[in-house]
Length: 321
Image (tube, rainbow, N blue to C red; front, top):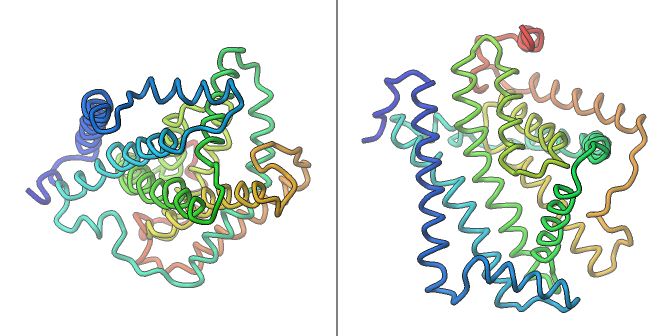
């Protein structure tokens, strides 16, 4: 069955991919409702109630409950985000690894430039996050965001190095691979093939989808920017591993900083937003664009994903046309 879908236009391929996504989502839901309670003795509602009770009483959550919460998150990432692109690539193309651009080697300079793009953009992302948080959100939505943050804090409880490593795998490694396969590897590629004259618009749309699916509206815009940066890395390099590395850095750095805060190596809580000056955000923007330009210049045209016949400057001019 390998390569069966390659004869169809990108729009139909995208429809097939969305069908796979929905099927995998349904399979995960069935697992949560029918199988997980038999294995664990907990339903998802009882896990959430145990978490709420622990927070209300200011007591630490049971390690067993915490472990099952992490298991559900881990399986959700694998089944809903990793499985659909893997199946789709296998069904659609004779060489699925080549189509996803995961058959490319990692070289030192592109890796460093990809990491720099994500690092240099942090002040800009922080500045935009502050602006996003100032929007007139309803009290109910703000409360929902607080509950999401509370769950994140619970998942990030790390009393020792082993828990740090587990969280790095669960929050940084697996999501970086799964979400980049899903959004950049498949969604972005198909959008670019559907609108080849405006590839940067396709990258923006993919970034919006990437942010929207997280359903955290107070951080919607900064996550769009992060998705755009990851899409830019993939588009300019033609190597999905580079966007995976960038994604891992973004998530992994947050996990590491929280761990360092918990063991009192640093005094500032990384989950508490601090004000970012506008000139730092402006400098961040300039340096990030410079790093992206260097990545473009240092990548041989033949290695780029869907860019070999396009000029970088022309593609920038194509935005909005």
